[in-house]
Length: 272
Image (cartoon, rainbow, N blue to C red; front, side, top):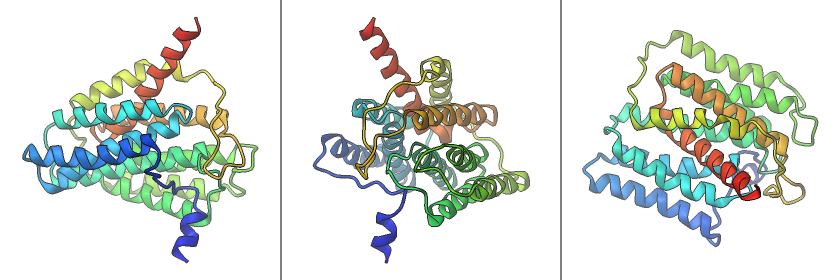
């Protein structure tokens, strides 16, 4: 039953270690945690560091599915910036990883890179992530699931949600705890710079471009319109996170977005 749910999920993507980019991601996850631990960080903070690097890689794969190199570049940059940041306490580390997971899940549903319609379980999982994110004080990230589902419901393709109730539920789930929360905004350093860089590079992400990569299911090409909307979702989330002082938790999203913009800029220069 569990395997069946996993295989039918629009959120689950397997990490095939036969693919060089995937091996790089696994090495970054484990190596990043090891480096942080060797640097004297706690086990929880070390795990957060490794997971942040991996989340940046995975998010970049959603934002730029045609170029594994974008994800491969985002991973070490995120790791370096995370190591330069002040060590997180346990609550901060958990909140930052949760924010990274929410951003990744939201982008994946909107991009539809898995090639499946989000199931009721997927939609419930996104709503749950919104609740947990908001309860942890990650208010900007908590709004991403609802926005992702709402945008997905508006698409006229085979992966569009048949009902839009889950989008409203996820938005409410993210908003209510946020209104009741007393969490103070966290301080940012290198993450704030990464967010600023990503937002300054926004013009590179506003242009729709063709996508040639296939979905994991393999029966269709990833929608260029959906990828474009994922770019807008990422930029909106980063802007809101910057306003709310939550850039530190969005470091993986910021670096993944910036790496995508840099890759696009390089392609444009190569064509000209």
